[in-house]
Image (cartoon, rainbow, N blue to C red; front, side, top):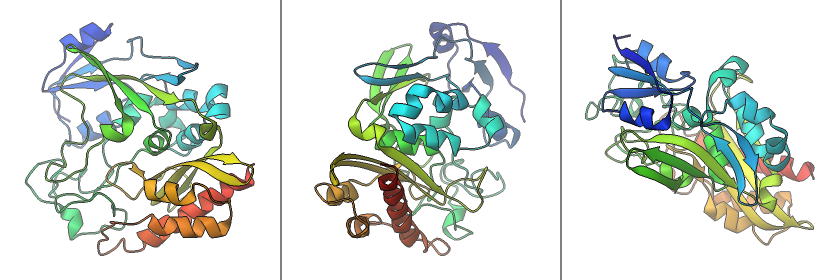
Length: 325
């Protein structure tokens, strides 16, 4: 870890005044501190933002509002979240470990960097860490890498379980900087790697995530999150699915689906949603709909199993959700 200056901001305005090209904001620190220890990130200045008034979990007519500094474990345990947005609670509880969930913030979770081993190893080539250096994953061990949204420069998966659930639910993320505040959809917040994999989102220099708003809907209350991984705890997803359905009797009238462990960002599946809508909630419907799930995918040497795994994961998630009714 390299030397850096450390200060605490007591207001959003003060945090903005301290922002700069070589500045990193510190909340839970569960990603930033790790990457600083590995020399993957080396900010000259670290600004602690934990005293900022960016907390609270409330529900109104517009939806669920969560402050960026709320801890993951607190949001997962909130009765309002568990009742009206079960997919969010489940995604949080399947993330990381209990100790990390107690520290990690909602905003920090959405901004966490990939867990690609090549990104975290400064002795290897990684365009995300060092633009123009190459991508070791393309010819190296790539079993856990993405098959959707990849490019010739990067195939790293997005690591957040929470982001998958929030993208499925049509979440907005609220941003603020010295130039003012703005709101963008979380689905549009994340960028594809293309030729600039080091640009992971639309966050501008000095901007902070101040909170999120998840729309209120009938399908949000009828939702679930399934995570497939090599071991049951403290492991990132090989495949995951956030599924939310609105039903009329046994007919699906609306569907919202996003997947993780497959894409370079949380990946919506509108073709699968359309194939489900208007049909009875049966295994035959699910099997037919998920045929569209891996459209446009590009596999590598060691992850060719992922399209089939994606389809099976979606069928399991949809079946589990129907069994909960």
